[in-house]
Length: 580
Image 1 (cartoon, rainbow, N blue to C red):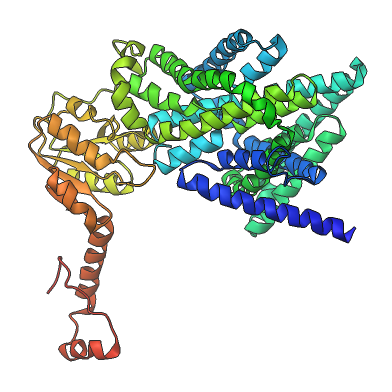
Image 2: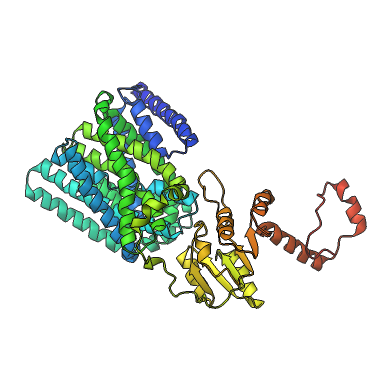
């Protein structure tokens, strides 16, 4: 027995090491872990390296991973948040799911799949990966942008559809296993009982319980995991399924103020356990049969990569959004999700689909996830290239993105200020206190509303849209200021400062251009492109603080200054403000 346990331990250690190596290769290619894990599952399967032999242990870990994943999905399903989803999120989410499922079903039939398999594959094509989309939008600082908020809204709608689809499959599975309606009724009653108890717990006990546990963050997370595992086990006991039990556990905690803390701490555990789901998936794939699936997989991949975004662009254009907003939001659905594979795995377990269909969806997942990462990363450059082709998807009057209330452009503004966060808003209020008229601009509706609530004038706008500055009242403005963080990296192709300079130059703006930078090295290229003054918030604040401190304590004695190098003290450069 000890030798067997040692063998399993060694096998899992080797598989984890292989995942690290493949994951690092994926990191160099800017691919998410999901792609790397699918590749590890294929490599470790019996038709490749044959490393995944402890199938029972891997299957247990796979089931735990799905329960944890659904627990984290449940954490996002705050009933208040669901109720607050805007019409655009609901309409776009349901419209995309409906169109993708309908067109995908017809495509699958044309590719020779039977109706039941076509239905499964079509539904699997409707799900997009929230994990990947949130990571990419966060890296690009676009979570708070209008298209980011809309995308997150319809991804939540997709998650709700996932839940309904899995509930339906669980009911079908119970009916198929028992062959009788009495058992189905018992399971449904048990599920309704669990749901009622969960809602009561969420309403009266969840927040007080977590408040008591929150004094120890580690204990709070351990308790959350125990709660999730307990409800998953209870769901399995009543025949409702571990997955849906884990989901209800998440829903019970979704309305608490500790939801985000629990989710962020469990995310690494989710990523680790997902490895074993994909290992189990790889062990079931027949690589010799995948060759026949390459053609259909490419057809369906093109449909997901091109068709899904166009569906979103069309729906949002019809609802009155600009084609740019629709395109940037639509790119987030240009891939299928890990839930697509879980959904197909449930169908495989029920005997509704064959391993070939599972392999087909796995190939589509590999292709679409890998390519959509680059599409989302370079979304702005991609939009610039195909923008003329998207004009039919925009109304003559994209009324949803009109400024309401309209800014009074008939009156001149002295300063146009991009970025209404703490730093930008403070600059704007101080300028107005000195008599300047300031027009604030931000792509975050909440920041813009907060600015307007304080009695200032502002408009909605995206600094990374090079066409936007031409729509501003630049003629009488003496200065344009950007307090938007300058984020330049492998996943931020649209440098907001450079885009703004390009837009101002195209609009023939001749006033002062003031930009915030985070380091001195960024100065030269910005000055070369037309910036006239650069602000370094941290350095400027440090200079100001040092000057005020020096005013309070007085200048340093000459004798002490002469001795400073001998004591190993640093020689501070003179401040630019307030030096005596």
